[in-house]
Length: 312
Length: 290
Picture 1: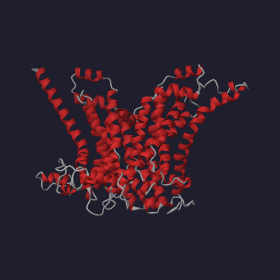
Picture 2: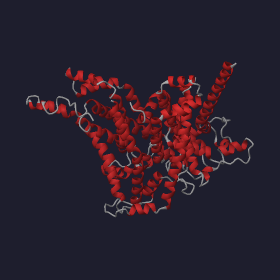
Picture 3: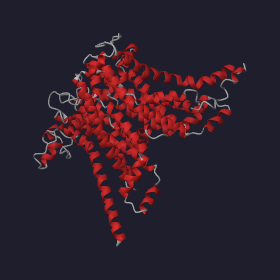
């Protein structure tokens, strides 16, 4: 932190009575300007988190009730089979979504980095899904994954009669449909971050290794990819965050069906809070989500900020 | 001979790379293609089994129905009023959050005070907040303020949580402007706002664009706040779209669904196509330090 070099106005100057008021005002003005935003964030983020925590420890059901029942709602939450489904789905979804998105995004970034013609056009094509609402993505994929009229029908009409792609109607496979749509939407994002990382690497490293006789795939596997560590960290953290809060996509694509098989913590929270009148359980699930995100994000932000203040 | 085989290897490598890239492009474009063609087909053609091909008869019926005739709940008004709702919500939210973010970034870089880093860190965490952890209290507060289920209520919510992102954008941008510039202006007698308006803002044009585009996309595409805090005719377009699509009664009108999805997607797609470079910058701001 830079508390060594204070502006001259701090402490010493205001002693002169004539200029006192305006100097003091000038001294406080930046803080006054920042104050409304700070207060908004303080209340909207931190006080509200505390408030949710409180509701999660109360007996609130349809309306908030401000008593204290300890961890009762958390016990109920963890005894709810639907919540178990949600947590298992989240882990399954996150693992697949991250693995595929990272692999594909990295491949795309590396290929695009080979002095490709029409790079700009391709990049635009790969990234446009990020500009779409998850509801739009869900709508489009719901239609394509529909076995009666979508991809399954199409492939069958090509002559492959036994082709089956009815995952969206099967409780044990519907979650993979969400993975497919989420990967489609987010790979461009991973690619953009990897590409930025690749562009930051000195090209002469590759040339030098080539002169040594290493093949291009070898060079990437053993030299370049390890150098992308910071980009990997960012991608993993940001994609995990996207997956934990994924809500719109699930609602639009499967509406948590068939039979609740694609329930996620975010949809669980919404259903229990606003539709099933079990606000306490809903709040407890929200706190569980927050803790998961915080466990990933806080160390990440801490390291980013530290590097930042070292860098400058 | 060695050079010849090397050249051939290179050419094969090139072909492979372009082949993979083209396949991937196809994968990314297919859903958009299917959306557009489906929205232009008559319903009978869709149920007749045409999924991926061009429409035999092009009709804009589904578009006009999606825009002004489709039923959302019990009201058959189409998406038009909800589209207007979204615009009324997006414009003020974008302007307010960008303006405040610019001021915050300015204070946090050029008028640093004890605890400025803490303030910044607190705002930064707000970028990664799972909103589920705050929607309950927010619903209570909006109710107390009389803003429940209103567009101004949504503007307030989007501005509040948008500030976290916009402050990050501007802070990371202003930190690259040398302090000497503002110090010199201060010596010349320029005050806090004078420096902001005549030095910082003119230099900040690219990041203003980044911030506006980011906020526009975020607020337009939001679903969670819309569905939690509004109902019926006050909803933004994403909520209305979801209601149209999730209708389960009657023969499903896939062409209307796709036209509706396109109507909801067009504003952000337009922004992306015209200013994609800035959009990508906003996207990667959380990862690549400025």
